Length: 441
Picture 1 (cartoon, rainbow, N blue to C red):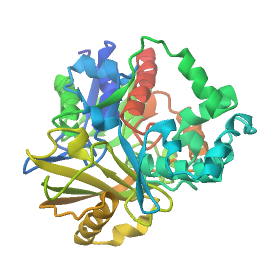
Picture 2: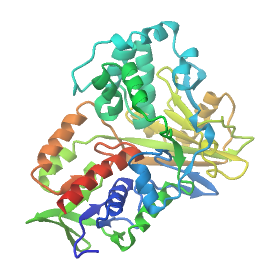
Picture 3: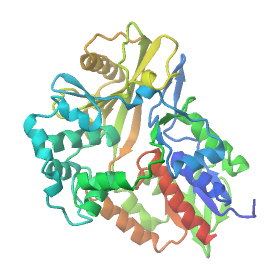
Picture 4: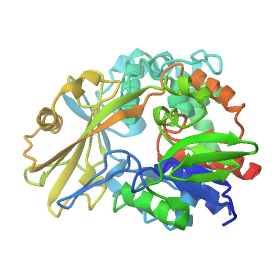
């Protein structure tokens, strides 16, 4: 390695590790500093009594143009999920519906009137590009009030544990607004994108880290060798002439620095000009409830999981069939379920004790699947500050951050608190940051 690294990455969550791995893959020299003893951040998989519970994201789609090359470069041990992972369900109005894309229209999930309103979508008037519209407003405008309300609820619950009336569709789901921007219609945009896709291109499928997302983070860290330094808390990041000085357990210098911390934590180490704006960032606490037990006492459907609709009458936002789509997450002849509670969708539920959350999850999971549950293993994991919420105004907030960043060349902010929700989005942002870092080194 050269005397100074090309970039110092502060924080060894998946966001920071992917940036470092991408820089290294391209021949650069990253250095990662992590305050804690291990890598991974919120990817702190629970390994207990042969159960493997993922408290955060536990799957991702591959192949992916940005994530696949990184994982291949470090020899990460990822495998396809079970084929049943494509099966998804929706619970609403006391009934469980299998959700399989357009064929879902054949079910009673949506009324006949709601289905008919979908046919007007290609002729719905478009909004001006860059209009910051809520997720629910966008989908109701394009798909009609019934389908729009349903779709917005499912998307908000499934990705952000968020409120569809608050989430910015352009910030939270940019691929959807891109269809309208490019083709003037979701339907026309989808068809155009499908025609443009190579016939030989493999279809992305759900993949998992069989030994846990914490093991995947460890593989990324190990690939860096001595350039991953745990137990190295950073106190400040300061500009000194043409270099950045990172001060903490010692002092490191580099032409670029990537602060891959949640906004509130980043505010404690970056120059003071960023502090007020970073402290405006909003995240919503969530609770993950794991339920494990013998297959006779804890029946699970074949599939990925269930999302709850706007008229479900339950407080659970999603129920994942962990042991169904990811073998090895429960002992032999046992099952594991994962329930999601809280977020901006239902913040008051988090006032319940752990015991009460477990009891609620047992009751609601049983109601969804239509059978009593008797788990013998339970676990509650609370995430605070929780999942970042890309609400209306988030894009303007990012623009203000970019204006400040212009006065601090070489300093970059990374992680899911900004513009990269999900593992594949983190990898895409990592590639963009690697471009900037290596261009200035």
